[in-house]
Amino acid sequence: MNMKFHMVGVGVALAAVYSANAQNYPTRPIRYVVAFAPGGVNDILARIVGQKLADVWGQPVIVDNRPGAGGNIGTELVAKAAPDGHTIINVSTAQVISQSLYTRLGYNLERDLAPVVLLAYTPLVVTVHNGIAAKTVSDLVTVAKSMKLVNASGGHGTISHLSGEMLKRTVGFTATHVPYKGNGPAIPDMMSGQAHLLINGIPDLLPAIKSGRVRAIAMMAEKRHSFLPDVSTMAEQGYKDFVLGNWVGIEAPMGTPKPIIDKLYNEVARQMKAPDVVEKIVQQGFDVSVSGPADFANRINVEIARFGKAVKESGARVD
Image (cartoon, rainbow, N blue to C red):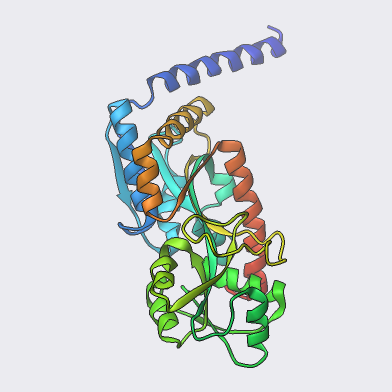
């Protein structure tokens, strides 16, 4: 038999099998892993999307919280799971940062996990204590020349830490980094004035901003946000290409057949248009931001490189 025709025949046969599997998928409950504790946006999104999939497909979608090691425990579990679409996971910026932050990691995001769909996004916002005489980033640079600023973050290697380092390096000012054990403890110190600068996503900072004790001075976004329409973007203030945010999306083990990836993407994308889903996500301070496997993969690859550079420059490492 001609080897070329034999290989073509095998390829056609496999494609037919994968297509048939996708039509029948899912054939049992889906395990939807969340690599963080219950209650956070990763968990809330998984429960919203999981319930919609269960309603449509008639199979239970079981949200399985596996927190620990900055999301790496749950992510490694999924990276090593059977690639059949019955195990999926929410990934976010934290797992992207882990690729360069951790010296020993049991998975590789680009090699071991297949992007399915980006779900939601929220930009970062630059905030200062209201006692600081700064209403723009340029004002902040001026203030930093006359006093020692304390730059709070949610911990070494978090997006709030690395975005602060990027800002200081790009704009040109100094501030002493003080890492907290999460953003929860950092925000009260910002409100009391023990810390002067904090960058994070809108959901965490919005209550403090609305209290009047913390002032938002710039959005790290392409455009102004409806939650903070009076806060100008970095680009509007003259600092182009400074767009950073927290996002959440679904991935599956690498090797999951493309027809199953496509079926997951198409159904999730459809459900993300539902008014009740949009409302619930907006309540979390996020915007629905759906993109498919190829665009999501590109985002991950670009941000691994970007945050890898930031980690290296900051000196942050976790053994």
